Amino acid sequence: MKVSVIIPAYNEANFIDGTIQAVRSFPWVEQIIVVDDGSTDETGKLANVGGSQVIKHSHNKGKGAAINSAAPFVTGDIIIILDGDLGESAKEFYRLLPPILEGGADVTIATFPPAPVPGGFGLVKGLATQGVYRLTGQRVLSPLSGQRAMKSQVFKSLLPFAFGFGVEVGATVDMLRQGWRVQEVEISMVHNFSRRDLAGFLHRGRQFYDICRVLATKR
Image 1 (spheres, rainbow, N blue to C red):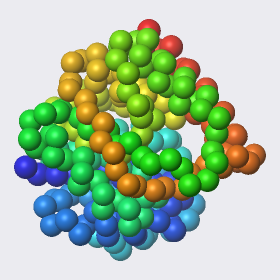
Image 2: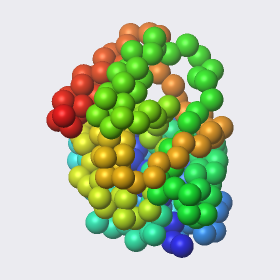
Image 3: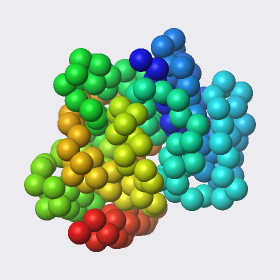
Image 4: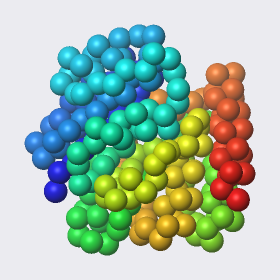
């Protein structure tokens, strides 16, 4: 099966090359698309040098819009979506594939180990978890995880992806409602966690608002 990897990235110059090289270390990955979502640093340039196909947004539009921009160019039978800040730990993405290849799942979602630094107080994750359960009757441990693998049929059925920080929650609701088989997989990935500081609280505030908005549209 052909595997395509989509990496939405915004100002990830410190991590994007490591992420790309980790993915490229698997010769069966036939396509890597990096969507430079209006970065003001060297993200797009580094992605191009790293050997990926680069799509450039003139300004920041959000992760959902980045995935939507990549959609017309995807050729794989299995689509992987990864964050740009995973660095070398992105190589763990291969663990998402066996349940799909073995016929046990249509979609896999990565669950991460606990964050190494204190983050939020669980309000955003709680909202996402309860929102998905109320709308689908199914519980998902990591509805906010952006590291996912899915069959191309699933990917196409989810288009267009929601804008803003509600993209993962919206996609999770849609795939469960459509009856796709979802399996969560424990993976030892790390990324640039938000902390309990002003920037972290502002980020989580935007997440909370966007998730509320997406959940309201799914009712």
